[in-house]
Length: 328
Image 1 (spheres, helix red, strand yellow):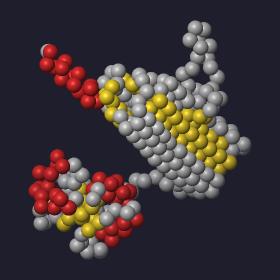
Image 2 (cartoon, rainbow, N blue to C red):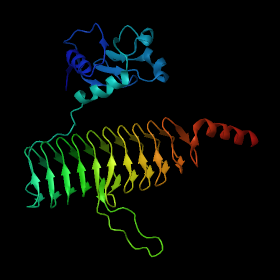
Image 3 (cartoon, helix red, strand yellow):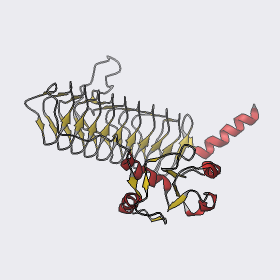
Image 4 (cartoon, rainbow, N blue to C red):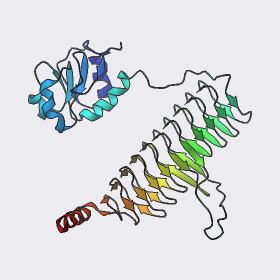
């Protein structure tokens, strides 16, 4: 059973500039992080949502990550670890409590096929039945799972994790990215001349910038001429479609079953709820939030929140919903 000392918790949070305050002894140990209702006497827990405030009186954890203003709700049997952002603290600490994080062991299976025109750097792990096709370069500490096809025309930079059954071609994957199982990246997009249905040859690529995560069974199509781009520190959920020539800025969060049509340009800090659809050839600004199941058909300016179909300012959409309900 893994044991994490309070001194390790304190050190990690301070490394990320989180202020932390507690009278817990540095040698006090925790075995796991659990929710308030499922925690036991050796666990660390957390309060990040006030709707669980009333559950604190039943908490069994040894300690709880909590904001100072909620201390009086915490029973004396549970020691407080005071932080300004418990959820961020939880996200950071989940890494040291989790034994299942993948990293390269430097072993390449003898059941892997590597093209002679490709280059694999030091300490790369490639699991059985994967293929590295021509004109591909894989840098240090990359992990590639089983039954994946990498290439042709791929560069994967340091410390990236490619899970099982992934297909990547015509792409550049930057440092510290995670590509989950079943993803298809760099294939030909949905492009043809409408009258004759003549296919348009795609010669561009996909660029996924550093520290980004691509969910299972998500498809990102290569550009026709230039690049389809996913910005750094972006998180794309499962079953998302990103069409050719789309550019998405940094720090995007896109939930499952979203579809983004071709040649749409999106700024930084995008948030999109599940099952939303975004039309092609649009310009969407920075810090835009698109509610779940919205249909975006027009450009969106910076700092807007939209909802509905066709998507509009969320306050206007709410008023229309209320009027409709009253009429009924």
